[in-house]
Every structure is written in C-alpha cells, then in structure tokens.
Length: 197
Image (cartoon, rainbow, N blue to C red; front, top):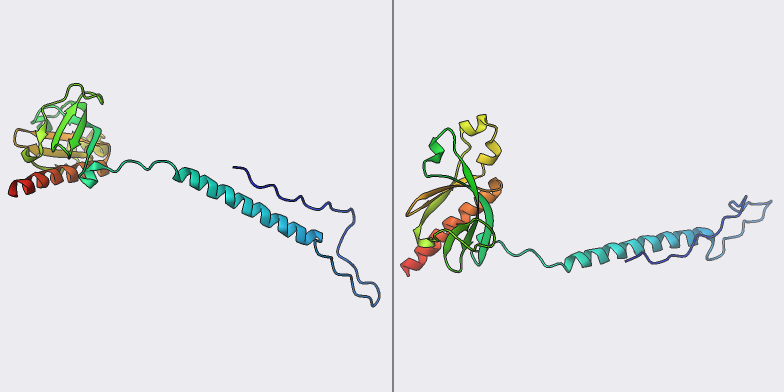
C-alpha cells in the first residue's frame, strides 16, 4: 500500500549555518539528533518505505495465476486459436484467392485436429486424427504476395498435409506459425510412435 510515514525534517532557522570558531575556542560539536543526522535518517526512511511498496506490488502481481501452458509445446491438453484458411487445395496457384477465418483446435488428449466457425464449437469440421497427419511445413512469402504488400501476413503461412487433403493456413505471425508446425509434426510423430508399439 502506502509508504510508511517518516519523521518530518527539522525546521530550519533563519540565518542558521555551521558553527563558527571564535578566537582559540573550538566550535561545539552538533549533539546527537542534529538536523543533518535527522535529515539523513529521514531520507533512509523514505527509501525503505518505497522499497516496501515495490515489494508489495511485486507480491500482488505474483499472486495472479500464471497463463496456462501452451499445449502445442507441452503436447498435452488442448490448444485453440483463430487461423486463416485458404479456400480450395489449389488456391495457391491462382492470382486471386479468398480466405476464411476459422477457430482451429489441436487436441492432444483425443489426438484430433479440427476447426469450427466460432469458439462455442457447436458445429465442427470432420476431425482429422493424428495418424492421418502426413506433416506440416512453413510457407515462404511468394513474389506475388510481396508485390501485393502482404509479405508480413504471407510469411506466417504454413501447409498441413493430411491423408485426405492439404490445408494452407495462416497464423497471427511467423512465430505462431512455427508453433503450429511444431505441434502438428509432433502430433504425427506421437501417432506413429503409438502405432509402432
């Protein structure tokens, strides 16, 4: 919360200054608790009070629950996110193509990959089992995309090949696309390892 109240500074006296020497007499020493010492003590108190406030703030932040682990990295649980899907398998070869945004889910517990039109997932696509995944790879930005000024978005694309068809998908950015490629290839390897048992 708030800084701890610290003692106020001693009032300054008009014309007050360091003690002077008069003749051969030695100037009197300032008694304990003199203004300078009290000033230093107050400065230390203020510093310690604000350090306590910073520690309290850190503790409060630490009490927040950490974000859930990314299932694409841990290969456990479920991960869902919005991806852009290019319509049609041969869409890449056409000068003009359209995309749709779908909510994709990779489920490591049930070993399925599917998409839906919304987060509620009341109606989903036909699930693709991990054993039907042939592999995933990043897509390089095409010359056509660069000319159209879409280099940044195209570099976030990746291709998923399954036993039934291929999907061209685009994530939020390149790093996110890399995570998806890692997860989908891990899913394929997981199914292959179980098949070999």
